[in-house]
Length: 166
Image 1 (cartoon, rainbow, N blue to C red):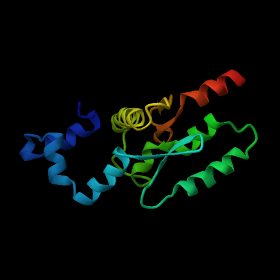
Image 2: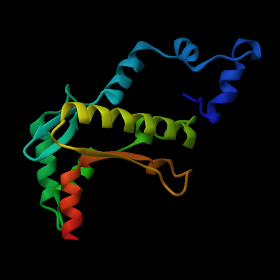
Image 3: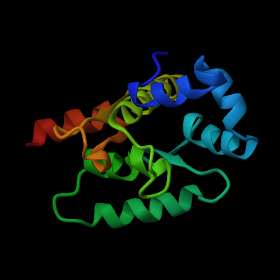
Image 4: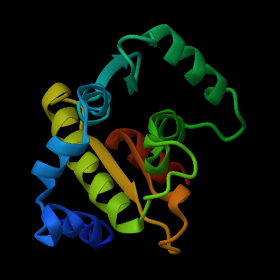
C-alpha cells in the first residue's frame, strides 16, 4: 500500500528524522482495543432476511432490528428495494472516528474507502455467491467535503429492477 501523502511528514519525524514505515508506526502508536474496533469495520457481519442483505453488528443489533428499520424505509413514498438496501447499508467513512478528528484528509479517506470496497466485495461474493451484489465507494466532487465519502452496497437485481421501472 502506498502511504497517503498526508501521513508522510509524521512518519518521517520518527527515529530522529530517519522515518518509520506504516506497520512499525502502528506497532508504536496503536493499541489492541482499536485493533478490535477496526476488525468490526474491516470484517463486517452480513445478514440475509427476506429479500435483503444488510450489515449488522453481531453484538448490538439483531436481524429483527434491521428489518424494523427497513420497514420504515419501505413505507416512504417512491420506496424501492434498491433504494432501501442502499440506504440501510451506507455509511460515511468520516464517521469511523469522532467529528473534528484533526488528522482527517482526503487521501486517507480514499485509502480506507477503497480498501473497504474491496473487502466488502470479496466478503459479499463469498457469503452470498447466489446473490450478486454491488459495492460503491462514493467520491464527492469536492475532495475536501469529507462527510460525502460514503460506502454502500446492494443486490444487483434490485438495481436492475429499479432502473427498468424508471
